[in-house]
Amino acid sequence: MRRLRIDGSEQVIGARAFDVLAYLDAHSGRVVTKAELLEHVWADLNVEESNLTVQIATLRKLIGARAIATVPGVGYQLTLAATSPADPEKALPLPDKPSLAVLPFANLTGDAGKDYLVDGIVSDLIGTLSRIPTVFVIGANTSFTFKGRSVDLAEVGRQLGVRYILEGGIQVAGDRLRINTQLVDAAAGHTIWSQRFDGALDEIFALQDQVSAQIAAVIEPNLILAEQRHASSKPTTDLMAYDLCQQAAMLAHRVAYMESFTKAKALLERAIALDPDYAQAKALMCRLYLVAYGARFISIDEARTALPLAEEILESSPADPLVLTYAGHLIGYVGGQSVRAAGLLRQALGFHPNSSFVLISSGYVHTYAEELDIAADHFRRAIRLDPLAPNTGHAYVGLGLALLMAGQVDAAISTLEQALTQVPEMGTLHQFLTVAYWSAGRKEEAARHCSILMQKVPDLTISGLLNDMPQRLPSFRVLVEAALRGLGVPE
Image (cartoon, rainbow, N blue to C red; front, side, top):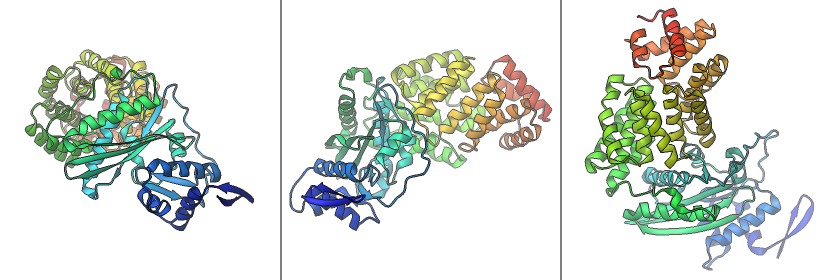
């Protein structure tokens, strides 16, 4: 046994825990990998990683939960000298069901160019877990804001309002894949479960299913795994097509530049050429056209060229939540079928109730169907599920729109201004701000956003915008027409 002096009093500590702390202290300026700690503290002994996590948990109880930070899937760093904020942010309340955040897994392949593959595997895992109705899962975009950061798991749990954290790492050797996982109770800081999954690269989807099934069983013993509705079935048999789709996904969810649209489109076209039955790639293509039109990088006529693709995948994959979401949203947005789109999104939510992407699309199509309370609720739920996501701005735009349509102009302006800090490239955001500011009598600000909108759409006319706009609520259309005419937009 060893002795440790903490705040003037001596504490007895086990030899292994002391050696772990001593090694972390000697290398406090960097992250120490788990493998390195095992090698130096246990020397030639062959021990499981769980031995290390037990010692880390012991140390945190003695010197404080924030004294040792976890870098997900990599290792630990001593942060004892760090001071906590004087006025920490209020923790989000825990949901009334098991709640989980999956942090980015460490890329242990030795090839930084494989980051997108590792991230894609984790994104798919999050998607699979979020389809379980009885589990609250933080969205992938928010989870990935922690990538590469030294984090305090208790603080992550507080910040995101979740009870459990899943971390891990992925290794690739030849055609073999290894996924290391660890489920942690965020508040207590102890490991609940850890497991290693091995298989061939072409078994990647089966491995993901094994991971999600075991996690579900651990955090919710009474879960009936059939509730997943088999939504995690293999999306393609062509790994190159899968690889291309993962690369495109990072660009398609938020089209910040025209170059993003062009590159993602080329990647998806290659994926579909390799596997003409790849429904997820085709659904992502619908999403790409949808977001590019919303940003006004492409015209509505160009966006409508994707409608036949949407109809094709709805016919061939009618129970796929991704197809229902992106094809349904496109049909409602540029196809003018608002009632049908709302029905498709209701089906998608039945399959995937905890997806921020489904909720955001559902919110928008319910503005088309004039169901504003439902729309606002879905946007707020999406923000709660994925609060730090780069594309959460889309949810704030939609929420601002729903408030504006409901006549809550001041609340709409506040929400749309928040969206402006996140998705300034979104053309429809400037359209809604134009209308909101004009309705509030803030004509200079309305004129500024109208000018930005007309730079994006040089041939903008009042009749053309009203004809293309999916929102048909008469009172809202009167506001739009009044604002545009008052600002001198051509008839």
